[in-house]
Amino acid sequence: MKIAIQGIKGSYHHIVAENYFGEAIELAECMTFAEMPDKVINGEVDFAVMAIENSIAGAILPNYALIDEADLAIVGEYYLEINHNLMGLKGQKIEEIKKVHSHPMALLQCRSFFKNYPHIKLIEDVDTADVAKRIQENQLKKVGAIASAKAAEIYDLELIAEEIQTIKKNFTRFVIVQSKERLNNVNATKASLKFVLKHESGSLGEVLILLANHKVNLSKIQSLPIIDRPWEYAFFADLVFEDYQEYKNAMADIRNKVSSLKILGEYKDNK
Amino acid sequence: MKIAIQGIKGSYHHIVAENYFGEAIELAECMTFAEMPDKVINGEVDFAVMAIENSIAGAILPNYALIDEADLAIVGEYYLEINHNLMGLKGQKIEEIKKVHSHPMALLQCRSFFKNYPHIKLIEDVDTADVAKRIQENQLKKVGAIASAKAAEIYDLELIAEEIQTIKKNFTRFVIVQSKERLNNVNATKASLKFVLKHESGSLGEVLILLANHKVNLSKIQSLPIIDRPWEYAFFADLVFEDYQEYKNAMADIRNKVSSLKILGEYKDNK
Image (cartoon, rainbow over all chains, first blue to last red; front, side, top):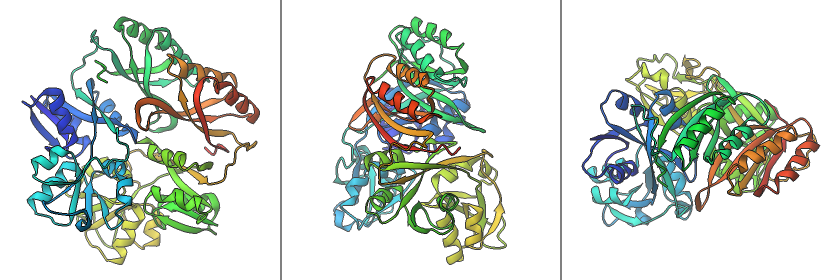
């Protein structure tokens, strides 16, 4: 089984792919999320793993857009507790580190830690693990990576400081996507939707009340500007429910209230 | 009057600051949004201009968090139509450009354009205008910037391709923040809130219906995980209304329904 991940071996996406699918997988390493939809559609990979939401930045809206535009189906989710570590070549002390490269989100999540080390320059990079790899391959002194403990292990680096993220319980939610539709998944307890509302005052409120009447709960909602019609609002929402049939009834009910409704996926709640 | 902006002269923040406050302003150029709250609180600047939402990525949640954590007040908003241009030293042709540096959001917004130029490497940078400045100062050949036409003018670069963003009507919403509270602004027609909900099914729906009863409309909503209590949800919402007193009545009504409510600002709708 071949899985597309963002980044390389040792990245958080790699950890999620192994935790979800087991270790007997082949990886397709992608340097950007934008490469993933084609690989899924062409059948080059069986599934892709995509970060979709985290404790600091909230929803990663461009990834929702990639899933929506390519008509991929969300077939699962995984919550990973993200522990960032500062690492470098063996024997390097934090006082010797001049530059730390990492993914922008990792830098953002560790901002407070580095306030105590103003001599360190923070530089954005495409992948957490890729920096670790380069430090080892090119024997880069004075350079640090922020990455997973797994990356330190794979690329034989030393942990200089552990769990340096500002928020200790720092979760990222990943979704598993594939090309085939998997609707009418009667085992599902969660669904991701995109809907556009008629512009009537309180219409979102009415939709949510209808859902509640069917014991369907909202676990996430985000309005977004409709592309090319800026500032007209559509929504991405995640629903959780116990009874699949009640959820289907709720979907039938709200169709009259919305101007469009698309189910991005139905899957097992994995929180 | 001194205004904090993200980036340097010629950045989109600079354009917004001039359009909003006029040309007789002094700039405090910030390389990150995170530097802004301190400058506002210390009185080093009178106001800060902050991008808060755009057509592709939706809400820029970390900036909402900066405003919320520092207890800044949103006192105004400005919508800027963003036109990205590819620029370089005079006489440079697109075939000669090897690398284009820009802000990650600008790169994201121009992704489709560069699919036709696979020989160009896209590199993330902290500010659109700063790249333009460096190209001129260091006479960098083969390097392009994606920035505003104003940046090309200031740093004397040539436009190689104009309006290269994928979505032609590409708006970014900026907010104007200051330190002083400015509640009870009877001229306000818009408000930004943060609220946390009691975990009862349909409770968000009930809040929205209450707002609608007071003719208060929702122009934006976004759930977000509560820091250190991941996956419990709070919301950032923008409300628009015509009657300030009705809006105040609506706030009084919803206080019973929410476990906390914070007004981030009341201001004139400027869409």
